Structure formats: C-alpha cells, structure tokens
Image 1 (cartoon, rainbow, N blue to C red):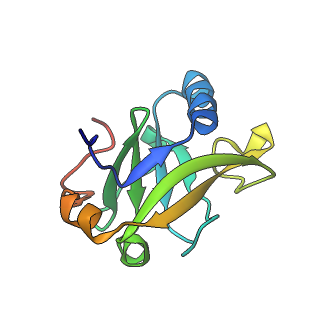
Image 2 (spheres, rainbow, N blue to C red):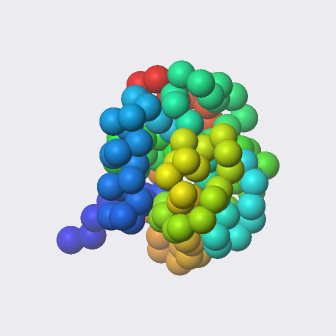
Image 3 (cartoon, helix red, strand yellow):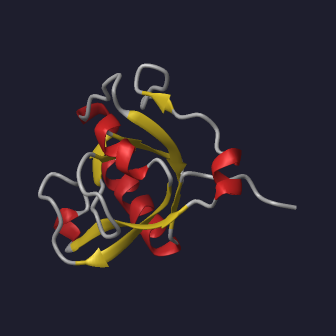
Length: 132
C-alpha cells in the first residue's frame, strides 16, 4: 500500500537539527522565497517572528514544522518534491540554524504524472495559519 504523498519531507539529520532548534527557540516555520533549483536554502524562523502573507503557499509540515513558499517561487517548484536537508557551511544570518555552522538546503526531484494527480491542492497563507 502506498503512503500518503507529501510535497515536502525532511532527512533524519535535518529533523534532528530541527528538534534541537525547536528546543532552543520554540515553535518554528520554514519559508522559501528564493532559489529555483536543487540546493536552494529555505529559511527557518521562530513562528511568532515571521508573518505569513495571503500569497504564501503552505506546502505541508516536516516534523510538526510548517513549510511555506512565496507564490512566485511556487510557480518554479509546483511540480517538484522537496526534501529539507542540512549541510555544513554558513547560510543566511537570519535563519535560526546559522549560528550552528550549518544551513538547511533543498534537495528536489520532479513528481511523475501519477504523483501530480495524487497531490492535494495547496493552501495559501490566508487559508492556513502558522500558529496552528
């Protein structure tokens, strides 16, 4: 039997880092607003410090942490499965993992036609709240 298809997943290593960051900072969210290809870096913010707009697209949750993408950015990624991973190196100074000497990054693959037909419609920021 096939498991539920998600638009975004997370590696075990990234999930372990995310759990440590939640312990340090409280509830978090991911937001991807730039980068059009594999290796782009999503930003990770405390939920109460980032305002989701009605143009942001909710892609799902990883380890209980919502993942949003800017609507314009989603046009590039709509047919793509995203996996949040982590690598050594400095990312953005505003993302909560930056002081750890690592950065989150996106690994991607294109959905096949069967998978695209299985995907649930996306929600926008005004339809889904990061505070839930």
